[in-house]
Length: 173
Image (tube, rainbow, N blue to C red; front, side, top):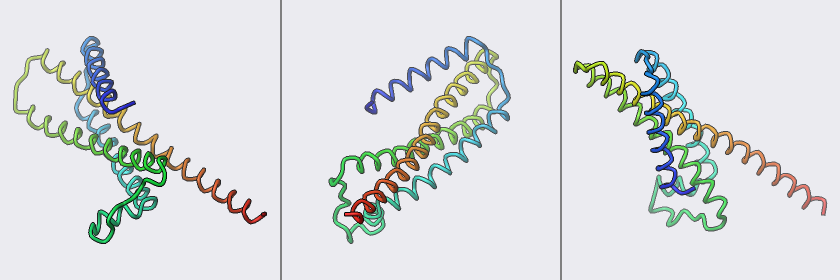
């Protein structure tokens, strides 16, 4: 699925959640939501750390290119399309988690800004539903990142087993 289709899908889900949460009049305290947002923030840190390690371990030329761009001319991934796709997935997970962090920062900043205004009851319930809708979407984004972390680990183990079996087969010949 390309990026534009995914963006439209997320936007449709956001609108759907907004309609759902507005129609059922969801009520909650910001402190309860804050705890969940802090968990999402911690998970983002985990994704950043793990994916950064994967990128540095699996693609040292890409890392060297970033650190000293004059030393290596090109970080070449033309050897294998699967390696390019794997790198895209790793970087995509980091970008999704980055977006989650940015949205959480905006929510906390919005809380500070909205605390200065007196809003009518219907506006408060609309904002609460919108906030819950946004949190639902960033939760999905974070889950995608977590699943890709798990997928990367499984694929790494599979690659190790395949390479070991290839070495054993070469040794037997």
